[in-house]
Image 1 (cartoon, rainbow, N blue to C red):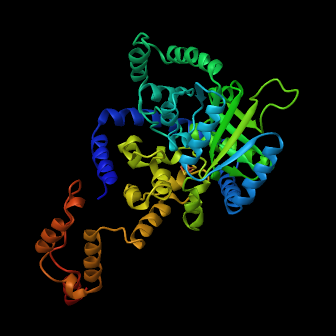
Image 2: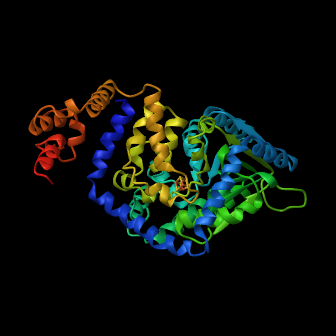
Length: 460
Ligand code: SF4
């Protein structure tokens, strides 16, 4: 067992028994479950829409190099700069250089999982730069010095009372603020930061290849302010976020909003195609797009796992997953949690260290069922397990156990050996970890052969 998997098991065990945590998560997910079916009604042929989205992502990923080059060519024509980063270190290094050049003291950030992935806030802090999260959920998490709990709803595990208490502790506000009052406090604080900041950092929900632009989807307007207020705008985006054409947005925007939050369409949808052009009054003077690989090409080179790159980060598979709902987002100790996190993390990071996540699944298939782009998530979890075994990463105990199981299954003689009681004793001792949280395996007193013979002898 690696240290990471031990820590995962320990945290999961604690969280799974935390009823207050479960109450909050169930409450928040039940709200989500109530609105998503309403959002879905906007599609006359939902399955066709999902299939078309999957096909569009298939096309984008199969021609990824061409799509990205086309984006770069068109984006740079309008004065934007594209930086290709193979690793998170390269991305951070480039952001550091830009910030130094701009003499940056404050960065405003809109919600972005990819900047979590590269640990941008920690990096900026080390450079003496204040980095302020401007999405309310992310702002709450930053105040609490916690990473996001969920890829769409960063503070999903907190109740409104928890948030009011946090604001009181960190900002000195009364501890009984309503959600509206909390929002007004955050708004006032953040507005000042937008004016101060020299650099704005955002992610992108889509890279639109045929127009050389990026699309940002958000509900609070903070993403738009992060793009437009500071003189420099940096976009950090994973290379898989490409969609081939502007027309595809007509499908992806409503799919993302419906599956992400149950909305027909998200409140603010912005397309940015470069810095401020001559004669324009709004927008940054300089704009950079950092195209981040950071292990994504490892997923790409494997024809089976490539499908995981179709993900539009809607979060639906997390909300549907019985494991996620019990252990919560932080137990994973990864940027991307839930089923999609368990699929991609071993490839983005290290298979040996993170392979345990592929086993954190009941394989019920609910994640695959709810995914708007129809990624076969549960099959990809099995594929990860298969790869781990193929690469020789299974433990010695596991290898021996399966060898024994196989030999016994292939031999009638071995299957029939010993009494039921003896088999129960041996098997339940060997599979101790299975029976820690489950009832014992219980073999029949008589073997199949004995039962068969008795049945035939009785002439039945
Ligand atoms: S895998 Fe599918 S359901 Fe899960 S976040 Fe990605 S798009 Fe959404």
